[in-house]
Length: 368
Ligand SMILES: Cc1cc2nc3c(=O)[nH]c(=O)nc-3n(C[C@H](O)[C@H](O)[C@H](O)COP(=O)(O)OP(=O)(O)OC[C@H]3O[C@@H](n4cnc5c(N)ncnc54)[C@H](O)[C@@H]3O)c2cc1C
Image (cartoon, rainbow, N blue to C red; front, side, top):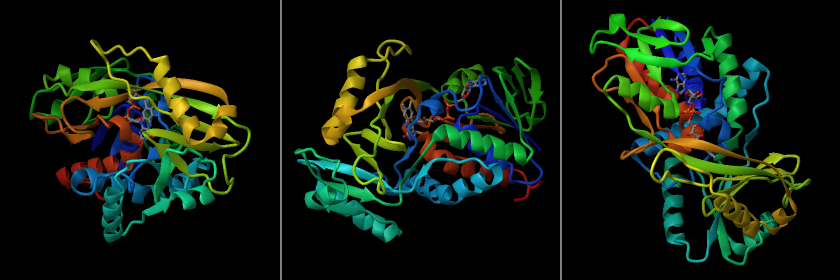
């Protein structure tokens, strides 16, 4: 069975690796760019699973599946590829400002305990003792999630590509999918037009992020995915904030302070919607506000220098929840794995598992 995956961000790469472990499947991944260039290349890699407020249904299932899978996936990929994938196992600390709904957190803590996960609620004294770098009079405590993680999305994507190649997957970078032509329900002549020529396959998986909309539009089944801009920056302090041996991601008011080693921190990200068109000019003031909020939480960051700033576009489904993991309406062999908006890094492993199940359950020839 031949499978073509369109798009090699974190989602396409995770699907390629997952499917590469199924016998009887020949996989080709196409991308118009090198891997991890679009949304994935801008992401901070914060995996807000246990600390998210999703508690049931698909949204929670995808999160818990991913958080569990990452624990085995990272060492597995490191062993196959000999690459180092920066993976912060020290958890996520969410700061609570005055007026925070602590009852809500306590309820979430109880639910997580009943689901077999941990959450800790820290008062101000405990927060100051464990994370003295947080020095903001408006912060009254924090919620600590020891089992949530953060990783480097580009390093992970490159490792997924290499491990998939090791398992026999073919990658064609610099190949753009120009058009899709297929008669509904007629799987045998499915084909796509690319800059590399016509390619046929039994299954097509569209994991092209923002590029998914124009492809589905050609099949008269437009899945509307729109961009939401994010800006972030890398600060260099030259030494660790607080205890060098305890460096969780710190998050407050949707601003993440992400330790990446050597006294450097990623800080982000803004959330900027398009106004009248799909063009979103980055708003410098919003980035400055994100930086000032980070300094408000950890005043020592005021001494840091800015090493880098960047922007990226998140693929957000219009008028429906993210992500979209389903068959394209009217087509038996086109699967969508797209529209992951703010959580594509978190949800990539669970997305890949779901796609594998969809393919296996449809094809008795494949074996795990
Ligand atoms: C600033 C910022 C911070 C973020 N932080 C986090 C975070 O902390 N945690 C988290 O989980 N998520 C985060 N995200 C969101 C995350 O980056 C996305 O949800 C995720 O990267 C989506 O991955 P993807 O593989 O679907 O899309 P992309 O990474 O956008 O990849 C799509 C690929 O498809 C290719 N493509 C498109 N059209 C075609 C075509 N016609 N032919 C060939 N190839 C095509 C593109 O070249 C691209 O490589 C952040 C995003 C931003 C912008």
